[in-house]
Length: 398
Image (cartoon, rainbow, N blue to C red; front, side, top):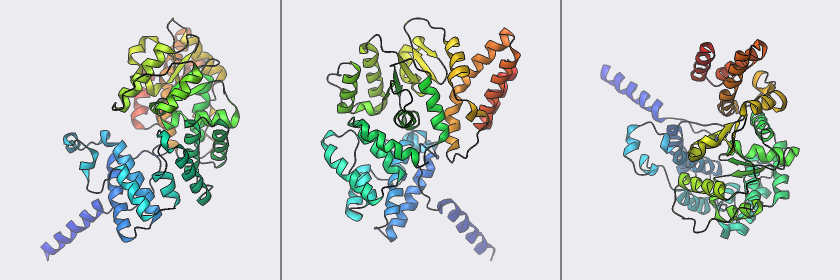
């Protein structure tokens, strides 16, 4: 009997580990999960599909579980990952994107998921017409799906159909599926820049909110927002460079890694941009700008590039005290279902806040020093225990 009980307990424990429930895979721009979560969800959704291969929802979630498992493989904490040459070795339930797309066309053709995933591939100029046809077909099936607006904005940015980009950004904005916190952060970023400047971005959360504010609210439409990941597509890069007076990159290698190609693009921009074009970049891009780090000046939640010394303390003061919308950092009056991602982005303000705190503490303005201390501790608290401890240690030391 004792052995039977132990066997049953072992089965229960194993079921708890391997019995993860199938969950809708949320975009990593809204909710970032650990790498293992996506690997496990790929297995769970694959098992769901074995019961019904016509289950469109299951295919949608299986596709994104695989996509994010691949994207987060470098963050795998299991030592065995270091011994693997490919993320596909981690589980028999993981598949290449093209293999999943073939399965979509076979099992759920003429569906929203098939049209938006199997028939749309950013950066492939030969797919321009077929991609638009697929997106329009998906729109007829699910005209109010916010995930479609994301794709439509990307497509119309890629082919510079700016009126159409505006149309879908308005729909996206009206859907209330966009984080208000990200829009506030984007607003502050746009207001950090000088007129007719260039702003380099890299990820969803530091790009789409900027375009949305420009298209929907008409805020700082003079700023050219360039997503470096999108610039890896030759036809898009050439179109944007032509608009900005930057020559094309000749003989761009096709086999470069994402990081290497982005750094090559940055170098080309730095070497060839018009001298009068002011350049800014999101803080996330500083690693790719290391060769130019002596010319980067923090001005708030952005870096400004300048070949001559600038008084960035004065710029930070002007931004925080005259331009930025800061109420959302201290007195948030709305529910943001994607607050965790916003909090991670907001911590970017902390270095500038610390510098302003030191400045006012040194100058004897206790009121303003206390304001920035309160703001810095608030950001630390909302970003989690680790950041709160760092913020407390810094401000208490100072």
